[in-house]
Length: 548
Ligand code: SF4
Image (cartoon, rainbow, N blue to C red; front, side, top):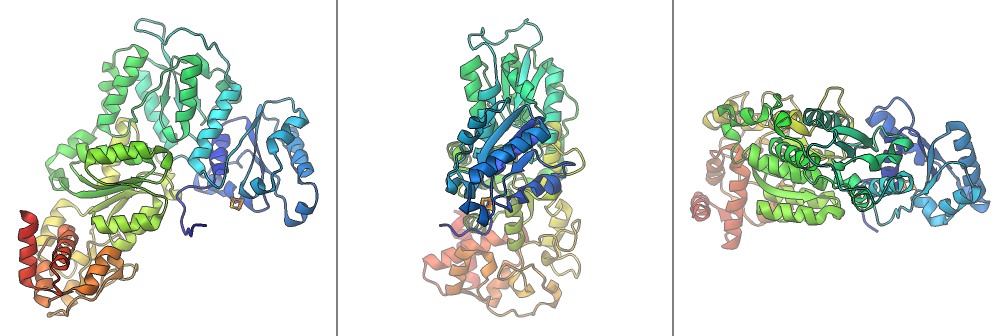
């Protein structure tokens, strides 16, 4: 048993639903208890699809367990085929159905339906959503792809128009809809034809001709890596390894695709709409340099974001992690490159602890990190699933390609206090309207506040900051009590050390965006020396100590 309040991923049958829902004429028969139809809402409400997912649930109830649930399954299969007339059908079980061991695959095969039936073995108690999507896509490709496995090597320069498959986009994918538009633009510029995009938008017949492409473009390894490896073995199709998130990675991606296609990369490299490099070099962005950023998400988006943060925005990556263990090796390699400890966990409390300990000035994460950052009063932007409805926007909002890089720049910089305001806040601390506790003035009232001052009634015990302005704070603040909202590590230290009013006042002179780090360093310095009070002298000694 594991106590879980939030989960980063759903059970694997949700991954299978994402693949089936993304496709056009594939139906999914899911042996599942009454109530599992909640999953429809992921697609009709969060992704706002205009029709139900192509899923038939057997919806067995407690009273059915005393009877023949196999008969229930088979009549649901007959009804689904008659009503939806799919070109192929997936059959599988949800978590509860897995326990009653009805063997959906065997039951469906015994029915001898006249369409391909693809059985799914998705172990719900050991695997999760992304794995379920990957396994489902792989099984579909294995079952339906036809072609010559002894075909010649991929096309070379001068051959007829090269063809590529785009693999990985699915229903309920974070910005998948818009990413494929950007990648299609690049391929058009390169003169590369898209053979099949799958699973999103593909039919069973499209999958059948997937082997006709010269190579594969893997956009989301979490979903497409297994299928791409099989296609490489089966049809000698090489596949891309670069994820085109960020300006630099997009350029690398164009070179990689051009090499595989045997074409000149120049037309795609010349695409005009890349504003991000100039935006981040412009003098207005100077204040971004060295900002500490904590990054967490699925491995693909987290690793890509770390590269963009360091190489294109000048941030310092102070934490890097992912929740999907299947890609832990890649994440570890990226963390080593950035000089940070990798964080591989699906426990949001562990993530919260790591963020609190790292004292970042910006968090890039999932919807979970948005909640965590809110509690810790740290600005945050979303870079990866799981996401809420607002991250399925109406407007074009890719993450990939040159336009994706523009979107990243805008959305990551937006939560931060702007340069001029940051400068003024360090000069005029006691303004009634613009002060450390008020947060960025370009954001609405409930936006994350700058690191709160203890005498301002800032965030405590995980609540929203809601204190009075700095001017109303006591002129001679008392020693600071422990603050639960600052994270376990700091809380423990504070319980054993007390700041004098003089030292606390001096701490306030440090710019708010690095004040948390200064506080933590000083407390650690005091802790290591067994000091129970932090005086002005301790603060200066700690500063000198860490400056060495
Ligand atoms: S079968 Fe699985 S997905 Fe369905 S309600 Fe039970 S635990 Fe949730």
